[in-house]
Length: 229
Image (cartoon, rainbow, N blue to C red; front, top):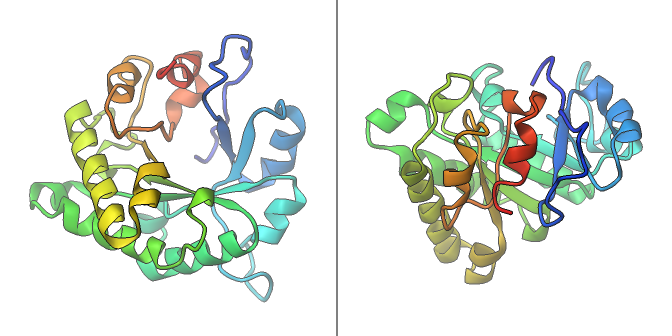
């Protein structure tokens, strides 16, 4: 997020079984990569769909890789709903990022009116389909379910709500991609995750990790990293 950075000063008590990736603003990617221990990954928060051209203000996967960074977050709810990015554009970005050798953390999720209208599955399946249509190697993809109504609001989906959507996403992948992908792809949860909510969320069968916002700036981030330990 704008103005946010990871809080990873205390690294001696981190679970070795958890992969940690710090999503930094683009102008700090080189700084973050140079300062963080190599055991931590670094991700850009966005990239564009082509390698070069007249796209002032955008960054390409090639630029991201020049900083020694190997991940990018695509389709975050704020990119979708603040900056108006369409499913189609996010799919194109995903394809180009993967072709360029980046790992992709692909975000999906419904708004409050969509959940209240009973169309959560319809929304997240449609978003996932466009991403899936642009993926050849799923080993480089992490899906992040982030209910928009729970981001930065202090509201968190209940562990049961999160598990329900994650389970249905895994079922969708089994039917529409393959059983192997459904079993292996990591589906992480994002939505006001804190040190107080992470343990129960992490205990859910299909919640494989977290996309953490504000809590990544606080000491409790260590507890979130260790939630599945």
